[in-house]
Length: 302
Image (cartoon, rainbow, N blue to C red):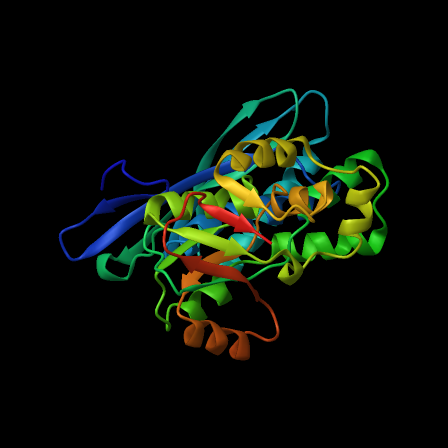
């Protein structure tokens, strides 16, 4: 349907008012357990369909694996994790492709559908909207801590729980509301994906950092120097378009740019709809800011 935006999936118009939407995502392990890695990678790929208001239909596996270096049982566990997560989403994995690679990689090509008049994009945010996020932040910090061997078990468990959670339930509840703009928060972090929304919608946004919900131990880990390199690059890029309250610390700024894996949905919508969502989504989700008329800077962080 064109290349004007920076949305989460490609959309192809059919003749009956429906759109086919398709996305692909894969990456190297962010956790040690192969089954959990498969679940997280599948949830991450499926998220792009939910972020556009769509319903997934089927998926294909994408696999890189060092077949001569690691036992096949590890690959079996990765694929089983992906298959189980796809089944939870209500879709089959109908095939895929694998290559011999020097390190494991896994993800999905996901095909979905959406009614054209109900598709969400990241280009419709309106002044006076509020910004809603459906998952806590901090998976980039925790993934880095896991690699360094300094993450506590309960912290790892919390990260796995949120990364493997589908955005399906959140998207279904949001579909009953007046959604102006939506995306999912992944590798560019909250600020990076919000920047794309601001650019696409020709507006500015204000983010209140005291409202951000973080996973357990994330701030302590960040203050000890644990931070993903991608998060630092995110902050460096966004800083050209943002104004930060001078009282915010470097850690505050980095946490707002923390590179997420399988993050939540970031949604721009009227306040009354946001409050309805928060009342009905089992205590999950939180308001992170609001949309304003376009100003000198696209994002203001207080």
